[in-house]
Image (cartoon, rainbow, N blue to C red):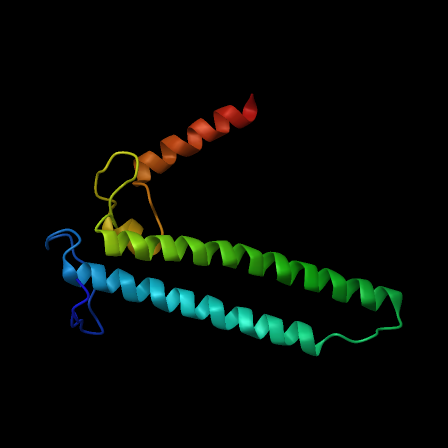
Length: 140
């Protein structure tokens, strides 16, 4: 299944073509891989920045401020690490022929939703039901 699919730079998945055809799958694969590359490049910048900024700051307020900044940066990177795992899972679903279909209903996820959130695993309706159910249980 790993044959080269040619895509024009301005290609966008359209509702009037077969759902999850080779071009659409390649479009989303590239979108996911580009997103992952951006995240990983940012992570390398963060690591480099943290290593470069390891210095002894005598002023307590300045040190506290820098520690807060570092903690925030590390939290952000942790969220992005989890996002990379979701991107990898989406790439696996592409390889397995399951990408673009809701894990709850099996129905196609709208192209608009996938374009906005390529790691989506549920249709908008299933996601909303899931969030309502989660809110009800949280309020208990």
